[in-house]
Image (tube, rainbow, N blue to C red; front, side):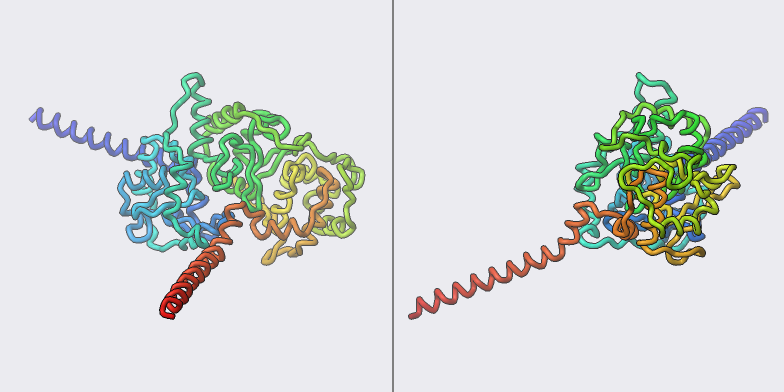
Length: 465
């Protein structure tokens, strides 16, 4: 009897231990999904169900739609084994063998450990609710629609090596490296891209264009990067998306703060900061002053030190006075509590390129941290405020740049280009020529065949004569 009782207790304890381990894996996986920012892409911003897809990722090659990654067996990943899941996450290959596009940052997730991939799998399969709804399918133009081509791309550019701690560094640095290079996939946005849209390793984290927005240089350079920021400022920015006298997060960074960074443990934020401090400095050509170092709120517009011609147009002044000054102040000083940011000592205004300033005007800013929701309305069609033409956006942006920033002028052509998704990389431009090139080659081959036939007929006729 005693043996039976002891055995039953042992079985109960073992079962409880297994349940505890499973619960731990789910919670660990949940946290990893936050750190990897999965929800930001795989949940539609228009009231979509968690992880059911429906978010369009703008790329130079076209819109790439995030898939349903709930455990739905019909429309999601419910039929995936753990090996299938790992291959999709770390190699960009679906269960059906089709290749994912690297807009899904599997090139960074390749660094995830087996333990973390397992925890993610347990979380998605056991805790995420299945949604039996099909997500919109990606339909890129030819030749980019040929997913099999990604197999060659992966051979060239995918490093399948999982993260290995550097024994010469401390635990905090290694944790920061794992987060920055792996889970948070910072280089996916903040690194420039090469001819084949691969990340340029020699300029890792030195800044990259995202079409409408620009992910700035976050190397340790004191002028071009974040070397002029204190540890406290960097941690505050990552957790809240704003630092008075430095920057305000918008676009993709606002999404990352809202969905991921603001929810990380403080020690993980500190680890990210520690690692970023050691990223080799990369200087941006022609940049001699930090982006946050422009402007003086004690001076009125027109008295600000400017560079170049810098004459603000009357239409820009009128637009700023009517649409912007009520929040940002007549002198660009912002509100006393910092909720409405100052435009002086503001990286968006002071960057070498006006890209992010134009993007903020055209797209607005939407960021939510805790119970604070920061919302700047956009000035495009469909806004509840006055929509602006490209000329008007250029005019008010020029006024802001002249009086609170580097002093250059923004053109309507720049705004038009930004609204269209930014300057296309060479591969996208070449891609547009593929179909005409194929048609030309086919026509040339047909013409060659006809010429050969005609020549043969002519030869045969001569032979008969």
